[in-house]
Image (cartoon, rainbow, N blue to C red; front, top):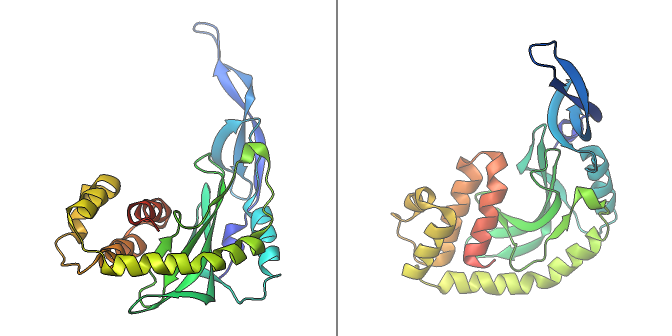
Length: 248
């Protein structure tokens, strides 16, 4: 996957506010507590943030991330299936094809999802998840595997990615056990109510008319819709909600 689209120049620029005496000419006053984050190559304003906000560019983040991945012995690939970038936000998926789970139908390869934003919508995040081979369903393991979260305002050190992947590998039997439980658990009223409460009525209506022999089938029906029908910038949110519902 071509990473150049993720790496564009951003600048911090001062901002001002327009003010004037009654019916007099407008003058610009500096807004000292704030600054603008601007995409330098197109001159587009991305966001207005407090001066304490520390910008960490996609370029710096991705270069540090890829340098750590290069130290790993296990193969990996940058995966475009659930990666996206806009001026304000990015999500980069890296998949490890040899670190796998299995259900009755498909191999499920471990993935990392790296997030960043320039508009305060989120800090730097790394989520562990997976990609299902036969249908490229994306999933996030927010319950079983610990998340990493870094706030822009407190600085940033990526660090220990290799160690975290090692820990995730050790946790795979627990995830596999949870998948096995979901493959046997019936789709009862309780799980239906949890799906509707957490995922919303509209999404629930799309999956409930189908006959699901177990909760894993329902889980995959939800992740299929999220992975194939939803805009890229909405997928992470709904993948995290699905993780909560099914405790993965």
